[in-house]
Image 1 (cartoon, rainbow, N blue to C red):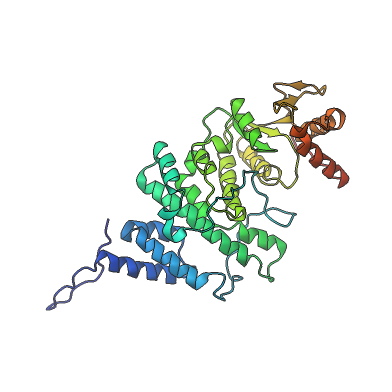
Image 2: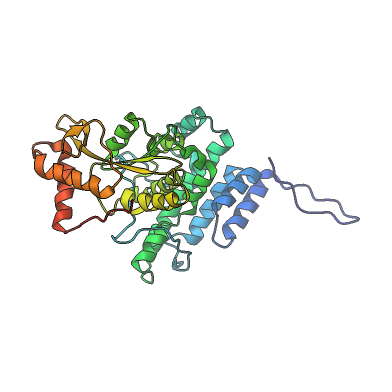
Length: 363
């Protein structure tokens, strides 16, 4: 719908004719890009409604010229968010398949529908029942988020920021958060129970096969999981952190955690489980069951029983017990010729060498 001309006539004068759509779009784009903080996700939605995607394109172009990393403007004055994790040199990220060599190397934020994956995204979202305007807005937020993440990653190098502030700065992408605000309800589970996981994407597939819903099998997760978006994984990893957080926030009942490898710095341990504990305090129906896993030489995932046997189902209410059983099995029964479990075995040894002793969560 076209924006209405806001000018008024005075007595005795002829009312000016409304500006052509292209002129209004140009005017709106310049105004939005000049606004403090540049073009926000809310501005994108407003511009799309009033002046079309062309205005969004021009505003993003002007914003990038004014606030890009090569223009000489400092980044240290930006707001630093509160998300991030303690320890490590960067934010924990969900374990995902990395982009292929053919992944796009442009942002496409200013020409969203030229991105090679736009037809795929549009088709998947349309098949999922999303209306066209939501599909376009979600796509713009995704690609705007990729562009914004590069700015945040560059700005986080500001020497005036301490390590915690750098991590928080990189995690403060409002475009990705606006995406969740727009379509986050489609992160709800489709089964009675939610699944969280660590140790490789096939663990997520395994959890789904057991009747639980992991993030990648939600209505929205299925769509985003099939996209590469950009060749630089660091520009989209924070997106999955935002989606992961929003997913856990929607827990309403039992949550099954599938663990093939233990890492204190993983999203599961550093972000998802602490958030889940907060939710448990206000909703006692949210319980946590831990499943220690081992992958046999034929690639089949099995669960570890208390007597260290492989079985089809073994769950525990204590994280410590789950991790201890996994460690004991790897120490006593792992065959070094079994390449399917070599990564989990390697990570276990590295943790023991560092004398890491994971603390149990209170149950």
